[in-house]
Image 1 (spheres, rainbow, N blue to C red):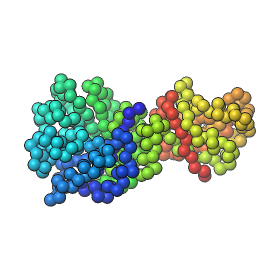
Image 2: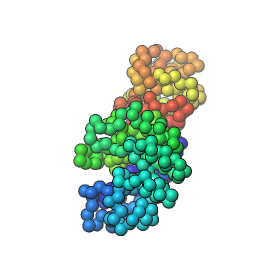
Image 3: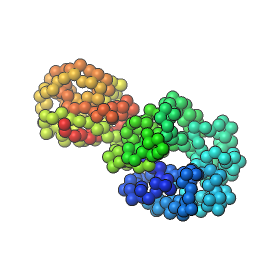
Image 4: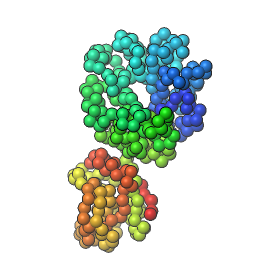
Length: 354
């Protein structure tokens, strides 16, 4: 895996986010910022931007700067290359106003990111001929109902990936939502009210997006930690709520790192190592053998003979079975994870007692 998380930091929000950036950094993290929003321009704009980018670079963040032609005179520069040399950002995202010729010329010295949602075939063919490195970043959509739909997004990405262009996109935050609408800044409309971790997992697994940015800025510690497990440990966490009377001996069993069996059907996640772990002298009597809705965590009991000790998560509804104990449930806001985790994935359960 080579997935990266990024954060959106703007000159106007710089001071309030500055103290949190160090703790959120992980290997490969990036910062997206826009340097052409007219509402942000003031007499200190150039100085603030210079300080902000220098601070983020010193932590280790890669910087993607969103530019338009009106950005250049603010910093007394005549070209994208000159601006990059002055501000030391890593990638220039060029917005409306730059010609194809200007972009191709800049790409000889600066990695260029284009607007993924509006990139024409003419530009794609022209930039392919340069053999230079190009990226494409989708927009974020503040107004509800205007985000891209899933099929539209997938079609655009597959087209770009045919040209070997790495695609970036946005997910919503879960802390302070950015104005003026304050309803999230996702690329996909279906992500507008999802938790950032769930949206991140969908982006990397369902759509093969390797660079995912939080449109609203930063993340809470809990969501950041879940994403960090994916990036650094290649492990997907599934938050569950356990039933009250689970034997204490099972807690250590549930806290291990597991693999989704390669032959798991679409209706079940089978824990590849569970029976191996449970055979170490553990006797599992029948208990709480109730019906199993989608997202139920189960353990086969001694009535299931050699299957005793097998743990599963249901991706569909199942009736009760006297051979299957119900241990708990995936939290509702995380159930959609079960639909995108592929077989052979590494995962852990994170639990709390109700």
